[in-house]
Length: 203
Image 1 (cartoon, rainbow, N blue to C red):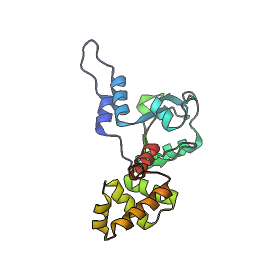
Image 2: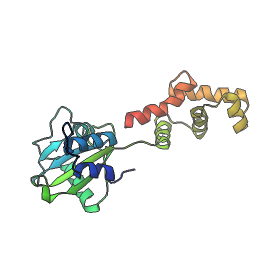
Image 3: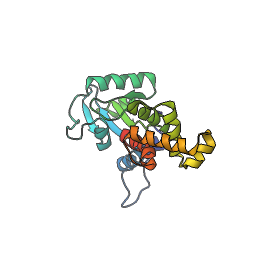
Image 4: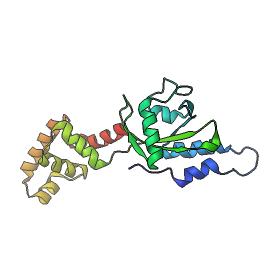
């Protein structure tokens, strides 16, 4: 799921914009690109003191009310930074007290002193299959429940479910009722929407 920073973001951070009045500076262009891609950025000096931090990064690190600039990186985050630099690939992190995980990538930029490290974050996007697993574990759903839920997600009627499974329509109706009771919802649409709710919560 994690990936290196796209070339479009790298180019936006390094290319000079065309000359002319009213043109945005390179830093502003880079931030627009990175925000659009969902990235948060933190820069540090050699002592791991934060020199810059975007709002998106602060949100990912669950620190919107605690400015990171001027502070030393938490030890767990510093370890992840070094691991990402050493491996040359993203490292999955789970910030303390955060409701979601993220992927951390980092690079050393000695030529940009006092900035020595640049770290960027991308929130982990939960796949629908993973959301289904969370739902099954949370509500202790059986394999049959999961099968019924899959049909509901596809918008199938009781008759369509009956045709595809070989169950009678009365049996399907009973299974849908049992599933809704387990999930604590009153409609089949609400049952299907739970997967989207879990995915949105984890973003």
